[in-house]
Image 1 (cartoon, rainbow over the protein chains, first blue to last red):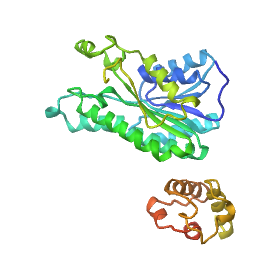
Image 2 (image 1 turned 135 degrees about the horizontal axis):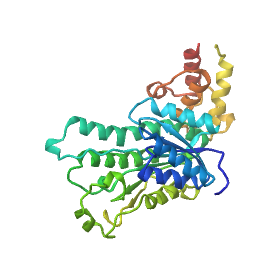
Image 3 (image 1 turned 90 degrees about the horizontal axis):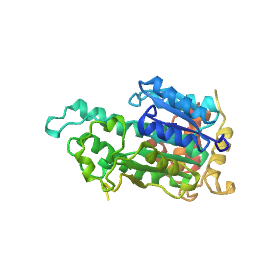
Image 4 (image 1 turned 90 degrees about the vertical axis):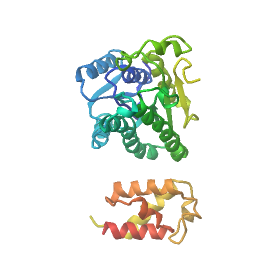
Length: 246
Length: 80
């Protein structure tokens, strides 16, 4: 474990399992104290915290529904007061999917996905940027999806949210680039998680790599984009999809 | 909490100087354009003002400001 970083801390939304949990573990290895945000599964979030602590890192489980507009302030303030420093790494990972074909998709299914996967990322980013601007430093990574780049039937809501997240990433990135803040996106393809457990095997044939990716493979890319070394990468979308969007 | 114009002026000049221009150029009559202070800088100035004086300046408030003096006067007026 490298030297702990005390100039700032990190926050990963939706970090109790899957890709988010892998990202929290990966970022902790760079010395960041990591806020492990979760909505409902406290046991899983605490297991992630325990795992990070057992390898010499620092982490804190933070309950908060990202669709509640009061959550960003509460979560950021808890991290700021616990670690005595601003959040300098934010990973907007929390996401849901509610699949249906467009002709039969309900307003609820549309709105839930747009709110969680797109609007929440905006609200967390807005809250993060204020202290980052003052610090002249910051890394924001948005977890988009291959579906934001390449159509997948049954996911119009998810695709719109994830494509919107890419456009948001690019625009916000150039707004704040001169403050030493970078904002990038990763676009995972088919990754082996609970969220893709019921994805049909037919999709595998479309993946040039002929296998699903792992959460750790996505986390490694996020860890790079969150690092000091990635300071000249901003507004970029890094596909982590075995070639699916190529 | 009441603040004096001098206090606000000194805080504004200090904050604007942190964005690049030389403090000696930052006079009440200097325009943000002359100082190369852009919209992002003004958003950050608004943030400092909110933290220090509890004065919330919205994007539309900032758009009306042309000179350093305009900003100082608005902040003093709102804080008063």
